[in-house]
Amino acid sequence: MASTACFMIVSRNDIPIYEAEVGTALKKEDAAHQHQFILHAALDIVQDLAWTTSAMFLKAIDRFNDLVVSVYVTAGHTRLMLLHDSRNDDGIKSFFQEVHELYIKILLNPLYLPGSRITSSHFDTKVRALARKYL
Amino acid sequence: MIGVGKIKQYTNVLDKPLSRGKQEVSLKRRLEDAGYAVGARVLELLCHRDKGNRRETRLLGILSFVHNTVWKVLFGKVADSLEKGTQHEDEYMISEKELLVNRFISIQKDMGTFNCGAFVAGIVRGVLDGAGFPAVVMAHFVPVEGQQRPRTTILIKFAEEVLEREARLS
Image (cartoon, rainbow over all chains, first blue to last red; front, top):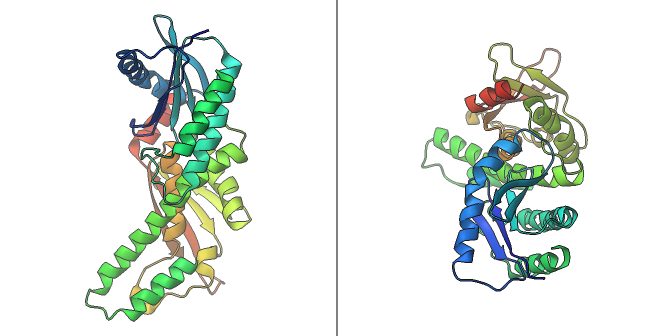
């Protein structure tokens, strides 16, 4: 079953530091731009919601047509955002938790500047594998 | 610790063309920046490892997180005391009788008011900044009667937006 999914990591300063199209649907030229636009538009909502709860996983916070935006906010206010069309809440939560652990490992590298782009191909491979597993 | 010792060695070896004042300030800034990098990472790691993925959204919450969890992981014990400033609403102080980084370092007389606790002040600032509570953090020596060495106080002064948000949330 084809599913669209766009995953993005946005830093505290609202700069995307990692993005990946992880859906199984066929890639369309303009879809990627639209996905990024929808995710950026959802940032305001995330900012308000983040201060109302001490949980990290904020479920579905925004909708666009039949696409849903789910967000996971880390302690350092780095946002892991996923745009998807499925309703698999548990799978998405597990996906976020595993990516969070990967992110912490990247952060612990003393040569990594927090807030800069994540360029590790190892990280990219792992995220895509997790997406295939959980989404 | 080793880093601070090396920096002191470095400053002693140099034949000072710059005035003493400038060197102190740049040393302090370098220590604070080093601490800031540590603080940002410590925040993420501890929230994930020790706090079961729960973020801090309130002022007292993040202060007690620093005072208990962060201190325990860094120095093996909780900080000696956490006080609210009496003169200003936005000031808080974490005091330590003998801060680990100051324990084996003696300050030369002509270094004036330089405090190696600037490293720890940087760590605290990194944690607070990362969690969304911007603040100015400084380390001071406070002489105590009956004790030969002064105790160290980390003074935290929160930015206005933090207090506004606290007022809004409560």
